[in-house]
Length: 423
Image (tube, rainbow, N blue to C red; front, side, top):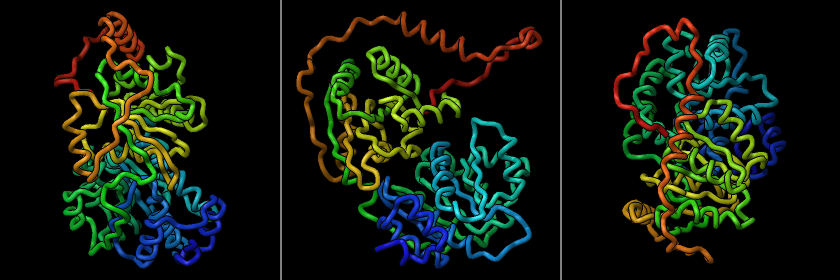
């Protein structure tokens, strides 16, 4: 089947052709006609199967058919859980709408508010936003959604996992009731399905493949390894030149920084991606990874659904994920759009319960492997807290903002409450 039979606007077909796409994916084939027909829709498909185009192309087609309206206003709102995913969606929309007179803006935290406020107040046609910053700006009366016609909730289950449901409810309550609402995700929990009654009207359900099944083009392996040998095993595996573009997942952000330092000390070019990085740092890390300036990107789960990079050869679960859904989305960063890739998971004695839960969920066992030439019986290195302590102290000193003389004279105010590591 070709895109021409799906009822898309001619200018969008031209942009799709220029982007090099010749045939729609199954989720695009199934979702585009009912969206053009005006139905609310729930789309479920594996990561990397083209869900963004599945909602972007039909919405742009409907925008192209709208009569001229002298009153400007935002027509489309797309809500996504992470900054990286917001940027990815914006890039796709701009590519598909390149021949249409539409404006697109992003709204997310970590950057200045003023450009986003100006974009919202000017009536930008398409807004792609993270819920937290968007709700803040709506509270400042910066957004006018009175002309809104289309709402998309992308990676809806992830937004629920991240605690965004109250914010999303408040956003949706402020939107026009007469709109078309679409929900897309690689997984869709029963909790979120029950919420569709709040947000949607008689939605069509499109499901491609088994729910939450890892991409069939990804080869999965488990390496059982003592906890103290994980870094040594990783360095051993990275000697393979075929591991040329590697995404490594760490559970905690400080552990991601530590692992990246250890790899750099052994000559492996690395970048890191987690919530402690500024937006500019995160964009640079992704750009360096895409361009091949670094071989390895070490990330926390903040990146699991926001990285859209062609050519990732391997995903490594350095820390085994605690939740099945996180595993699905982590390994979905490779094997995208029917490409092939490998997913490697390190499993320690503490991880076997999570591994068994994952295998029950996907309905099969994952192949165990042993690395040839690696010493699994090596003793743990002697513990030396001094180096890590000095580095952590330096990090705190370097990241502490410079206070003015006037500020320095004020008594220091301590935040109450317990400090928590965040992904």
